[in-house]
Structure formats: C-alpha cells, structure tokens
Length: 369
Image 1 (cartoon, rainbow, N blue to C red):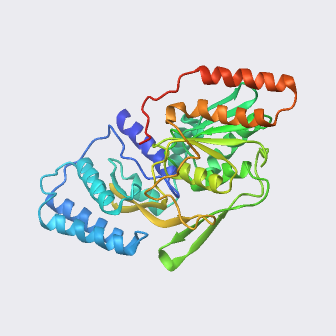
Image 2 (image 1 turned 30 degrees about the vertical axis):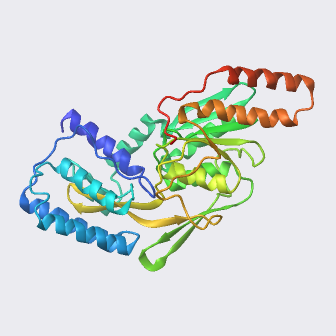
Image 3 (image 1 turned 90 degrees about the vertical axis):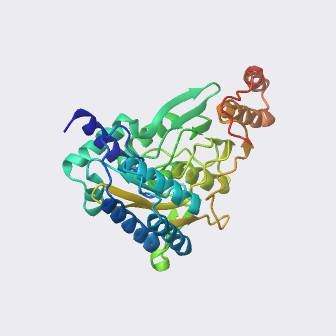
C-alpha cells in the first residue's frame, strides 16, 4: 500500500471509530479516486435509495428522498459525473437539501474498509490503527489549563469513543478537580460518540440524571440515556460554576452535551448558536467502496420534549465565538463578585474583571446574525 493510501485508510478508520451515535463519516481527502460507469452509478443510487427509504429515521422524508434520487437518475442528472468522490458529494448535498439533515451523507473510500467495518468487528490490525489515530488526536483533548483565579479550562475538539477515551478524560478531570469553576470549550468540536458525551456530563452531576432519549424508527424503540453512577476519575460536582463555549461549528455530540447540561441548568452556554444536528445514526454499507451515514433515531430531551435539529443550541449568553472565552470568564467572575464578602477577595476579582473588560471584544469570524 502506498504511504498516502495508508494515511488515508488510518484517517478513515479514525473517523469511523468516532461514529456511534452522532458523528458522520467524513470524505477522506487525498485518496485515489475511481471512475464511475453508468452501471456503477445506477447500482449505487439504487442501493442508496433503498437504504434511505427503509432506514432513515423519518419514513415520509426517506421516501421523498428516495423518489427524488431515482427521478434524478432516470432524467440523466448524474450522467456527467465520472468521479466517485464528486458523485458522493452531489448525492450528499441533494439529500441534505431535501431533509435539512446535515448528518445524512454518502462517502467513498479507496480502501474497502467501510463494508468490512460494518459487517464485523475490527481486526486487531484495524483496532491498532484506530487507537493510534485516536491517540494522535489525544482522544479529542486539545488543551487543559488553569486560568487566573482558579478557573479550569478544557478544550475538547471531539468526543472520541467512550471506552478508549475514558482514561484520558479521567486524567483531564483529575487535573481540573480542584479548580473553582470550569470552562469547557466545544467551539471546534464537530461531534463524536454519544456515550463519551454522557461520560463527560456525568463528571458534572452528583446524582443520576436523565439526559435524553433516543427514539428509533425500527420498532419504535426508545433508548434512555442517564448519567453514569461510576466514573474512572473524580467528579467535579454539581455546585461549582460550569460554562460551555459554542460556535456555529459545534455539532452533533457537542450539541448533545451542551443541550443536556443547559436544560438541566448545570451549565451556562456562552457563544454562538450551534450547527443543528440532533438525529443520531450509523454508517451503513452500500457497495464495497461506498457507505452512507443514515440517521436512525431522533434525540428527545426529557426537559424540553424536543431537540435542536435544524435550529441549533441557543446560547444563554450570545457572543461571537472568538470572544466567548473572555465573556465566560467575566460571567463567572461577576457572579463570584456579587457574593464576595472579604475585601481581599473583592479586590482580586475586581482587578481581574477590569483586565478582561479592558480587552477589546473579538469579532473575527463572528457567526452571530
């Protein structure tokens, strides 16, 4: 295998390992493309249409998408697309336009790993590659810091699979355990494993809490999600302030985490309205080199009775994402200042508040309308 192909396979394996139940597989860049014939296009679209019609979480929408794909194929709309990668992009865009569901997409892989991963457990070699790729990303933990006046900071750029990431998350929460407030930065977090979102939320709760329900199309099955009773690291507790930073790019499992803790009134969400992907699913095989990420369930909050699909998680404090860290610190410090009685404590809080307020608000790349 060429070095570039090996890298692409490792990256794709990493993406697939993060799938259940929220994140969608990304198209691997830099991999060799393949030429689609009329027969292979027909075969792919037939399989895709049937899969969406039979499995997509909303049956009516699934039938509409399938009918549209078949009609477009009959009309020759895809005849000029010879690239496999380009065809999957076009099909993904069309399905998302009809469904308004950003999770729904098709992916192509030069290596036939998608079908093999969907049909059977990983081989030891695949598992080793996946673990290596996750370690290279430090299981999503981008940065841990103790900010002035003992405010903890955790930047998490993805929710890696709970089983593999548990030790790293426990280590992070151990480092942060003795801070007096915590800021969790999800501004660059595009999602990942719902179980990992549940795991991190559990560190911030003392008692078992009902976080959400997955409601599946198949059999009208309902899967409840509760916070965990046992954790591998120390709980942060339920009383210290927690802020969650979001951006328009925060998506999927990152939104799940923010939505649950916001509605439980355990955290203050600071930043921008998130991307709006609440339908959870899995990658389903189509052909040896093609798969689709298909939402199979919808998430429902026990607090709101709904979710954030298509609308995003609305922040408690709406600011540009680039300015969210400064604003979150100010929010925490001003709450502390309101209850401070000792003159020395009031003085240090006032000094830090003045320092942060003296900094100009950062508007770069602001996603707020």
